[in-house]
Structure formats: structure tokens, C-alpha cells
Image (cartoon, rainbow, N blue to C red; front, side, top):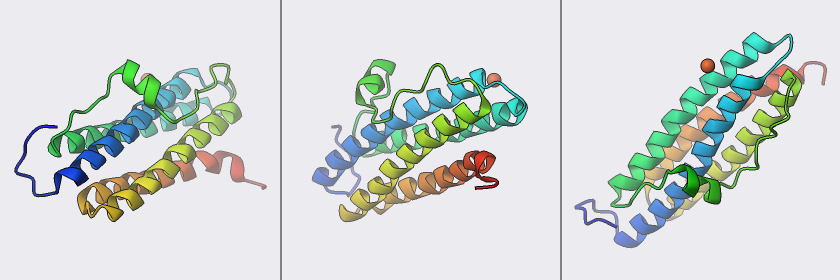
Length: 160
Ligand SMILES: [Fe+2]
């Protein structure tokens, strides 16, 4: 940890940096999974899903930056290398054999839901430690993830 005049107690900052790096790993993993889907989706819904998955990727890139930079603001080191995130991410591996729009909608919605669950837990943890700003970042991300989950799941909800 680096010294900082930030008035949050060091114990809180240490825990928040750890939490932010954990969710940073998930977010970078999620971002690469959205690109995987963007590149490989096939079928009659290709163009809609190809564009949608890239829009999700663009928002997730912003979440990555929010988490990494908050960790550094709190005196920590953002740990976002590919090898670190591969070890640390809590997301399941993306199915490399996904092909149809339905396959990718299933895989992407599962990844978004798993990520969203972790982020919601992050809001509660940050709240418990009185770090309202980290809780606010997680809340913003959680709202975004819930929106994208809706956009993706809407492709398979008709007639359910
Ligand atoms: Fe592209």
C-alpha cells in the first residue's frame, strides 16, 4: 500500500483494494468473454447480437477502469495482468464451442448474472466498511449489468 492523505482508515483501504482487485479480475474476464461472443456468434440474429455484445464490452471496459483506478486512489496497486486475472477470476470459462445466437445468449447471460451477483455482494461489503464511494461505484456497475442482462435475455424470453 502507498501512503495517502485519503482519510479512510488504512484497514478499510486495504480491504477495499483487495475487493476491488477481485472484482477487477472478474471484470477483465467478463470483457474478454464479451469479445469472444462478439466475434463468434452465428445465425440469423448475427448482426443484432454482434453489435450488442460489443456494446456490453464497451461498458465493461469502463467498469474495469473504475475498479482499477479506485484501488489505486486508495493507495493500492491495481492488479490487472492477464496471468493475474486468469488465476483470480471467479467467472466460469466461456464455452469456446458456442455457435448459435442461442448458445451465446445463454453463455453471455450466465456470465453477466454471475458477475452481477459478485458486484451486488461488493456493494454490501463496501457499505459495511463505510466506504460509500466504492459502494457507489459497485452500485453504478450493478445497475449497468442488470440493464445488459435484460438486453441479452430479452432475445430468449418471448413465449416463455
Ligand atoms: Fe468488432
